[in-house]
Image (cartoon, rainbow, N blue to C red; front, side):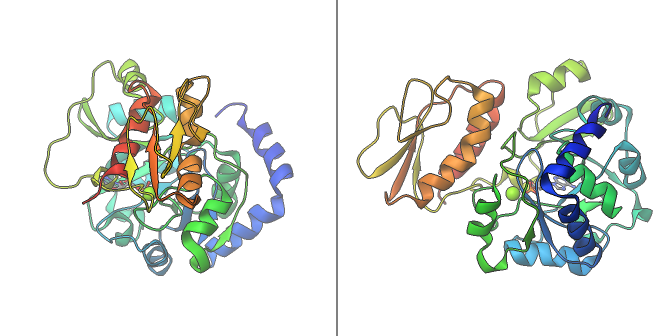
Length: 319
Ligand code: AMP
Ligand code: MG
């Protein structure tokens, strides 16, 4: 985390040290706060407070079998909550702070509310890189459970406005730090000895993981839902969504990519990282438009494109 302290100080000035201190106070009192991370906005609560955690599920309308990610300020904090095998430790060393979530064995004495893990003996941990979230974690001294700050199953929020639109009157205080830079939820992996499985693709790509782990990911065993980011329908707008659309009908809001201009373009330059950071903002825009349907141009399925394709497939799925 070298060099990040100047960053934190600068951002605390820009976004208001007072706002961060106030958010810390609310969280310590068991309230919810919507918080910025580099992936999407999170709906945060003290992970050791059962009532506060219940508030997350209630506010999101989230099924309580869907466990939450706990956010920590650094690896030391994570080691107090979970047991890290050497590979998990190696990946945390390399990718933290950043958009990688590690599912590890929960230490029973960690004090985490059972509702956080939905009763599992494993826990999902992440150390976020966003300087405001980092400062909040340090200021509050809390380990924050935080799923995305939207109604369950809906489009994830990448701005404070999205949080307000999605949660409506249920929206708690929002620590507004502008748009999220990465824009897609974290990559989630679980490690088993020397092997690892990708439970949810995200900003840290399979190639990135392979370089550090020295081996490819093992395919997930299909024993029920390990990670509800794996639910067939998730991240979904309220309208039908058509994929691989080079053209669109007048009824459709067309989200373009590269040379396919669309009504709005994920990245005119064809840049996948830019497309990932804009995906949810454009889905929100399309959902709010006066057209009854959405069409999305083809996006290449490699690197960051893999996670984009994963989210679009779930957004398009109708049961
Ligand atoms: P969200 O908070 O909305 O980004 O979703 C968190 C994701 O982490 C969900 O897909 C959860 O299923 C997954 N997750 C959290 N805890 C665990 C765990 N112990 N084992 C597997 N997946 C988990
Ligand atoms: Mg979510």
